[in-house]
Image (cartoon, rainbow, N blue to C red; front, side, top):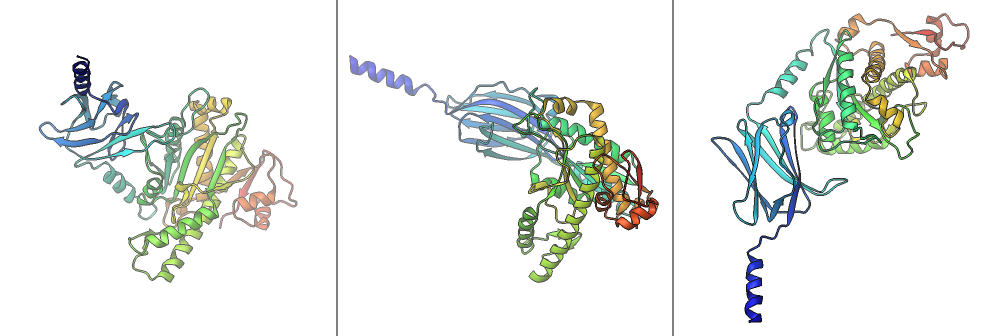
Length: 433
């Protein structure tokens, strides 16, 4: 009798599905190239994915899995996905179906846990016959003519599944920097001879290297990455401007030189793969040196404008090995607009008026730089106006001359200064050559 009961219990247990993973989250967002759907899993699991036509849909079968979270679709971010549903083709399989508005190419992969995230099954959907990106590139390319606009690529940091830093009141970095980036685009577009493009204009993630590669494809004259800093000490405050460190530049130089042997890596429109090692090295070194020099110059100018606006974290431009600053032929800076970890600055970051003022200060710095060093063939080169600097506390005449890359003698002469004494609040005319 006992044996028969034990056998019956074993058979009953064998009939009960054993679940390896729970789907405890579902998120969708769309960028100009694709729609990304993410299923958050509490454990690793096997899966199968296939597509069906008439109507188009993606079917995902998760082995030994169960649904622990509702599959809610937010229309604003749904992109090519028109609906989502689930079912169970057998007792050990969870089936998730993504209904599509039109035919799409599909890529999927399982991500390992990192940071606050566990396992994630990612499904990328690329709509066929999508011309958004080509249209944007064509629009920017049309400006690469005589008296063209200066092009500034603006990169809002983080996005999508990467929220960045979070403030005490749950403000997310990815949201506020996108708002500031949009304000910066408006401000730059309003200036004669200048046009801005956004690397992202929504809540989606772009890989770091792809961000500055977008700037290169747009033939940008400048790349500006916008962030909001965080620190364990909530009292730390102020804005910062970063350029690439020499260590970061050296590592990127080696990577680019190695890549040039197997790919048509370009620097300033020059192909490296048909050059011998020595010539490729010289060309890349010249391009990178010129780019870093220009990056320092524009960083100094933007830092000076932010300093006029309010408190800066340090009294100079800083250096760091940020991936997004590694373009070999596009001058690049990263602006930490404020500390989101500081409660007062977190509040400012959400204020539309403060966002506009910050964008205007960054624009002033960028505009001053291009009026000092206009790219040949641009509208600014033909029509630039005098550059003026407002003196703030702590400025010295020598530091101002260094910031704008002009001689101390010419700065004195154009402003008719007999001494190096300058008054806070006064304006200095910056000589241009």
